[in-house]
Image 1 (cartoon, rainbow, N blue to C red):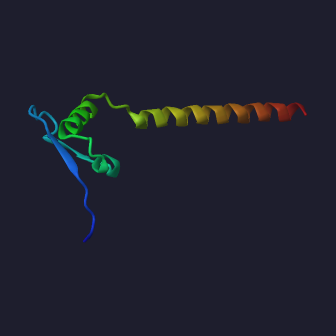
Image 2: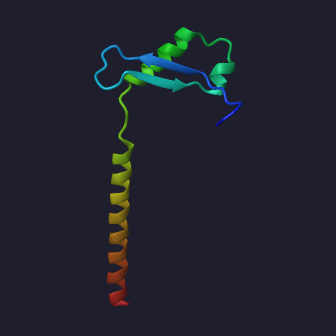
Length: 86
């Protein structure tokens, strides 16, 4: 049981309901403390985030891993060939 934790959230409902019924955004402490932030601004920002295309980070990590492995294999091969002639 957690005591003393209070967070404000925004729940954006999806009327189309293809995959998701709703999205839940947890507000940062900075956004909650600012008096100038209105509900309309928060809702607009949440909808903007929903509509942005998301990057596939796992694919980027995979390609970086493959590039690193190839570079390591190439460097090992170069060192091995150089050691034959010395």
